Length: 80
Image (cartoon, rainbow, N blue to C red; front, top):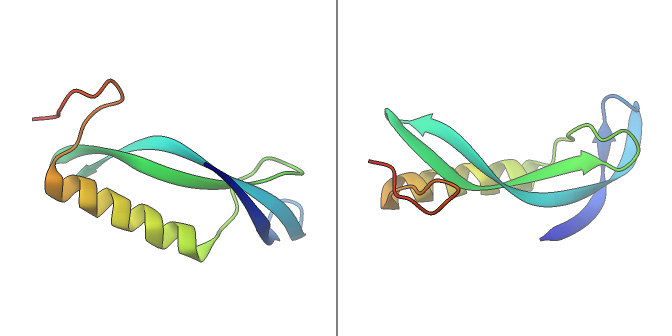
């Protein structure tokens, strides 16, 4: 998934174009390791991550959904 838009880049100090890439993130939730799809928006000028509120909401929902149904690592093995 590759999307784009404009957001304030703190490093550049102005609104810049960003791209969104889907990666796999792993966190600990309730004592369990959870791997889930994570959407990262990065500035096309400097490469720093930029804040996009809708992505933050989507990432939290993904993390909680994968926690509730069980999580799998990057190779598809279920964490226990």
